[in-house]
Length: 173
Image (tube, rainbow, N blue to C red; front, side, top):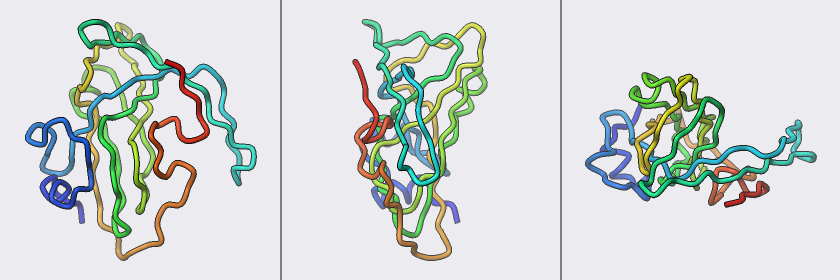
């Protein structure tokens, strides 16, 4: 069963909202833009994480109007909101229709039961003319689904991360 936006708010599953009335949706909660980064190095991914190394990123600045102009390419987005996923739920992140109608996509993995922390996603600007985004723009929607029962929960390296780069990544302002 998918939780309603009201249930998500009532259960305090998404935190640090800018404005509940503007972010609560029938089937989820809108996620808003906190910062955008660009990768500056390669990453290493393996099977058991013994050689894992996160890619380094550089944070892109907003202009004096709190806007940023993005050319076609791939970016790492951090949202303002944080989550606390119950042990009987999982979540998925989807792009808002205004974003994909503008030639921009958001991709994120499954948000496992038990995960707590920041939310981030891959943003791909496909529009050949780019896109202008303002700080706190509504970019995505998080949707929660109840599981068939309670599970042990997420215990990975990104638990309680304060940035979508993760604990082993490095950010440069």
